[in-house]
Length: 231
Image 1 (cartoon, rainbow, N blue to C red):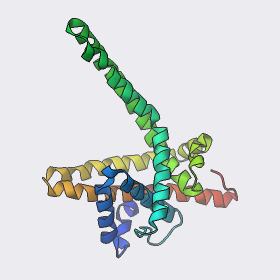
Image 2: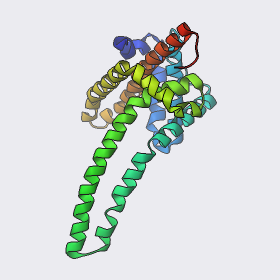
Image 3: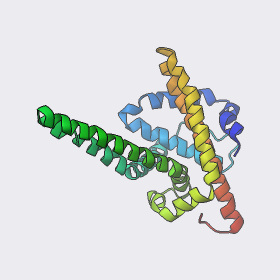
């Protein structure tokens, strides 16, 4: 894994600032949901360019239909895989309904049980999200390679990618987490820091996608060397 290249590759692109600004604007409006599909699709294109060893892998913000299609597809994949998290969140909220409907000591008892249950569910959600983080690179790479949602649910292939490249996956996660901690410092600056934070998030996505692309390039290299198309 070339960490330094992942951190600085975009600077070699003459239009990196424009691309970063467009990504920042799109990410700023991602609360409207639809813009987030374009953003995710752009990162898929970046992963693909790195896998294909493109000299300047940072894509142009064009071909919006393709960006939307790929972003929406990968969004659906993530939504399906995280269904257990949403269910656990709903269960944790439902636990407080009896406490709110009752009064006195019985109400306090239900609230107390709800708090304990939420703590337990939070631990389960944390473990699940940690597991999901481990397979996230494989999901992105698998979709980028196959360009179909069904490929992301071939669990044996997802497991094989994660298992065979676990060192690179863990290194990527450590780099992303460490960089996110450093970039979070921009929130200290009022107003300006909040705006810059969106740009920092786009940069973090650039780095993450490049790292995923490097893992994907290794997989593609192995597949070409062995003369097969599988993992």
